[in-house]
Length: 315
Image (tube, rainbow, N blue to C red; front, side, top):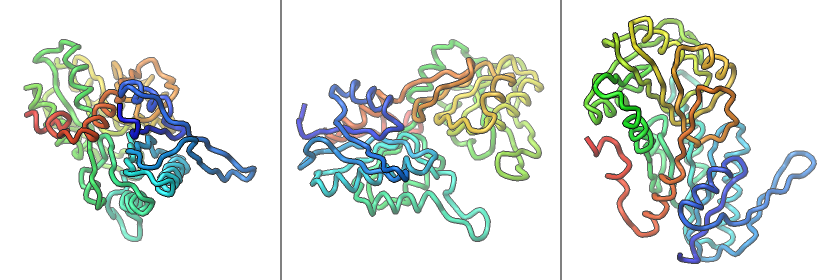
């Protein structure tokens, strides 16, 4: 292996980063985080970075100090003369703030992109952005990977055959559900929802036939799980045989686990882009470690990743 390749991890993504490094065939580099008594913290790399192809692995979910830790690592690496700095961000936080949906609000995803570029990031590698257009917020390369390369083999292992129906819990996920449905040659359904305020649904209706079918709900993020659970209930009331959900990023805030346990969901499959101690037996975790390790390797050898990870190119 090229000794100039170095992988480091922030604190919050350490278990995933260790899997990525193992899959790639190396060990994580040593980085220390020192905290002052007032809560301020400082990061320092404990090995030389000069001329290195550097991959910094850190998801940027709440709290915001996870994002700031990544920014500090990037700045430290730049000042230590790393050759290229690649930010591997399995879960890209603030991605839900991708536009102005009402007056006088920030576009948080664009601000985060600006911060990463200003800090000195040369490339971003991330999984299932909440909105595809976030790639355009960057003036540097963005490798936008899809969890479909993990989810589809799992779905095929269930042997549901032609009885499967791919579904979206809202109209925003229609493109994702349609891509899966085309690839698996099955039907799809959509839940149309209206929100009275964030994380609270006022009305939901079903578009499509799910009677006697095994439904798979697809989404990029599961937060309070309110939408998923209400969608699953709607599907079962419409005569579905079973309902399971597949969501890339398991945020699980508020009463998420309580909602899942009390729901009609057979199971909820997530990835380890966000590391959690899951409190529900219905939650199953699939790892993105091999996916990210392969992309790191392909970047170093200048190989294409588009046909391997973009579900739409497989259709």
